[in-house]
Image 1 (cartoon, rainbow, N blue to C red):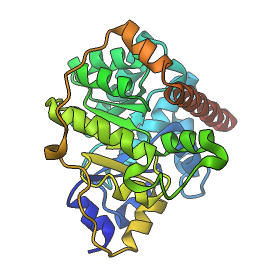
Image 2 (image 1 turned 180 degrees about the vertical axis):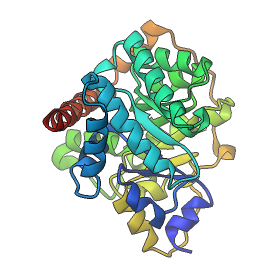
Image 3 (image 1 turned 120 degrees about the horizontal axis):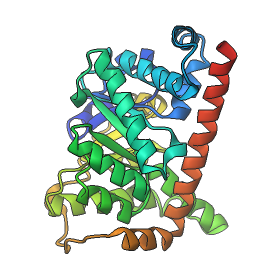
Length: 314
């Protein structure tokens, strides 16, 4: 078997793309999207008509509603090609507004349900701020399942696990990016590859803690820069992978062993975090603080660009 097929024996493979026409060749179970991926997709000839169709059908609606309808339309198309769940993201500009996040998440789910899609096939993506986590906890109690994204620090993962969130997406590649940039010329790529990659180490720590303490929140490694990071996390609950890296895995046939195993989780104490402790722990982690803020800003920039494309079609 190629390494993609071998990976599927250990881990649920998720496609990280808005390009739903590519999905068949990789046969993922789930798929994830974000504003940047949708923006990229709608600028391609194969998908531009879909954007135009949605905008014209709802030309008189407020911009935020049209954007949500575009996101859901892509989600609906993706669901035709996968057996599992699609993740659809709440506007990153609402990352520090619990009430607004709740309203947008409920609307996204209502749009899916109006098309006959059940709640168990959708994950609402929300940034892992304190406000986002609290909003997600409330949504989970309503039966709306969430994917907490832009997750870089253990405190974010811990707060999500304690809040009963369905799934978290720790960003392997962006953690790697920060440490590599911080080290500058002193960075040793070979010494920080595979199991020693700082992003891989972060996900492994969260995975082991959750398994040791029976936390049912699913751990989905995300934001990969190379297949070595993926190989080092074989066995993680899920991994969401770009089409380019999925294709690379398909070209390899060397044996791929399971790297993460619940039985290997070390004995660690159970921890709790209130808001003050969460905010201090996040503030005390320069990497996580910087990458969370940067990620929110970048997604917001692409959301504005998507709105510009929509405005041009109205």
